[in-house]
Length: 285
Image 1 (tube, rainbow, N blue to C red):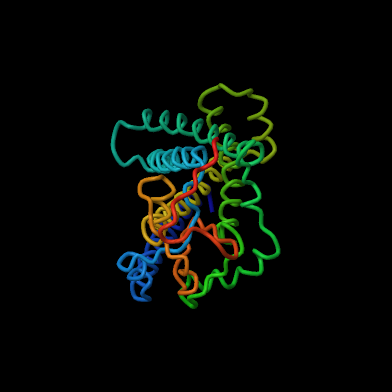
Image 2 (spheres, one colour):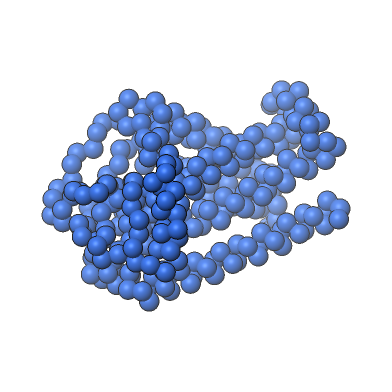
């Protein structure tokens, strides 16, 4: 199999995978309605407890990152499949601009997680033994095999795994993207690019592009799932996260098997804000 044939195989494989993901999300939302979770949440207003009004900095960084990732996915697909004429130079330069924005946001967010004086939150993403013990239970809950959702931390174990995987993917994607940028625009020390190309052999440039392309599909799939959760089972948490609407929550939602939302909740084994209890002021950033 030559490189051209392999590229075509990649295109077909990931296009098929993405269609399967979309079909799965359609099924998942149908089950969300059939199982009564939609009625309890959207009609009866029985929202579970969740992380209310997080500090401003993570919200702004998250919004900037999500918007930039959507632009990168769209422009990246155009570079691969130019579906209209005359836009390649604009799309390519737009892609590189938002690549720099994403890298800057990534560095800022990692710094914030470890070194923020008031809200360092890296522990919220650490995976411990208690988290690992809940993997099967969380899978059963999201697969509608159970109405009981294990809850031992702000984020469930699948969220933590996906966020940590996302970080690793972002680092690799940034490295390959900068190397591709050096290949087209000599702004990075040539020795770095040449050493990398030599390390992977004569097909170094193709391999760098291939890794970047595969990861681009990975980000498109993960972002699609994230947006689906944010605009379906996690609408109340998404609204509260961005301060659009102050929501009443059901402090007993967990006992009824309701969703905790993609961003998790803040009960941590008891307590939490009651239905009519006002929000506490957020700490300064």
